[in-house]
Image (cartoon, rainbow, N blue to C red; front, side, top):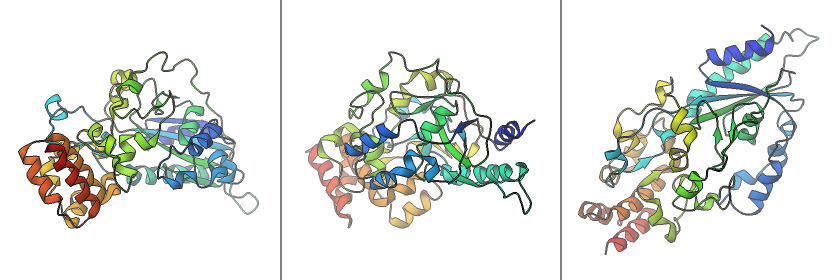
Length: 351
């Protein structure tokens, strides 16, 4: 096998479900991304406006970069029972947060793949410099869905997710940038969303002003994870019992519904049903130490106790039971003003 084929085989050996290679250069949607930022749709995620040149051109990220190796790893595990999905006494976590933090699983594999690329390149010795590589898992200035699409891993859907026709959209993406010239893959051009608008219609907060455009300021994932302050009053009833992220636009999409297969990565499976849909009453009791212990090694730590219990207070307010009211009264006295304010809102909603 040539080097490119060996790299693909090694990526598969490392456990990645998808692998493709794209030519480095300018991102295909750099202009649209800049317009999205200018429109303020990034909300409070100021980091997404930094380094515009690096986001638009990989040559500003790694000088001399020639190729982008893009991998995909499925995190599809199982479907929650309907009785759990529709139980207002439970909070719903996005599927990607049911198991371990994906960064902890993907980064070591990507670093190993990058090492393999360097060692297998044949460029060694004093006169032949070792290839340069750089690894990313959604933590840097890389428009990864653009590169995944260019590398043939799928197409970008109207819900802005990357969709693979054979694996759906429950995918984590990662990249290895290299200054090697590798054989590139072709983008998939024969598949698309067609006339389907299920994701746009199903979004309870109307976060899609148009197909392929997501207004983060109205997105439940943004509101429950990235937003650090108060959730807008008009959006709180629409969040329902979602306390960390949202999967609605993928749940209704025909591609993952029909073609997603359970992942082989056991670390993404929930230890129990309470990891996927925890009881709100239990979460309302969490101290800082409890929070850190319960969610150690999971993406939920990103929300911090303040964010999670803020979301729990909203979900309790939307539940509207006597049990919820008791829990809300306790949260209304929480030392954190954000938690207390949302709990007061929950109590008023039940009045």
